[in-house]
Image (tube, rainbow, N blue to C red; front, side, top):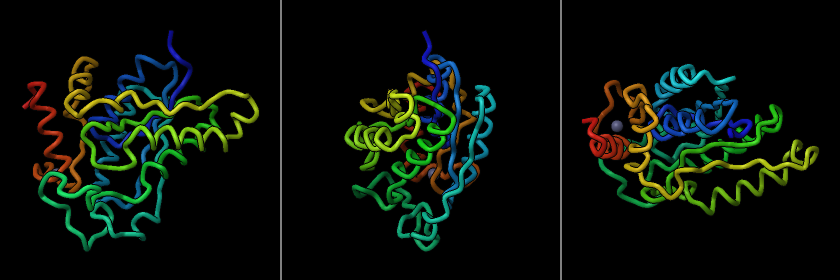
Length: 218
Ligand SMILES: [Zn+2]
């Protein structure tokens, strides 16, 4: 039996696309939410729109977050900082956007509250991600905070769940699952540099290439 509904954080990359296709199997109604936060690779939003259309989501919300560009000091939103052409050299890397997933989840939670959505899906994978806000501890702490501030939860005495099926997985595991689910990886995008075609040398391009190679797509 499918669960009632979910809102999926959709970047347009292969992880969130796989999550979207998985959600299609597990939930009746699917909403998607994507963010323009001043990222150099905002071209990803066009891919997100197409993916959301393909699975026939109930609604796809696109939300602008202006302060992450203003804040700068990270290579994804700060024009004075170059995206490194190598795999993640530091941990956390210069491509870490401060509080990004916390900000995304709190905004998604506001939509969940208003639209009475009981699950928030995020495609974080902790096995091979260098980002602190991609870990189990972060997800469970955020879920607790969301439930304690939700109007819907206060009224209906239910729970909002943060759905993180990829937490214990690697990018290669996600690619394998995506292949099984029939995810159109050619319609996904993740390059940090935002070039078309993708640069092939930034950390996310490297990880993506490895994952796609592992399932015979290169
Ligand atoms: Zn790239």
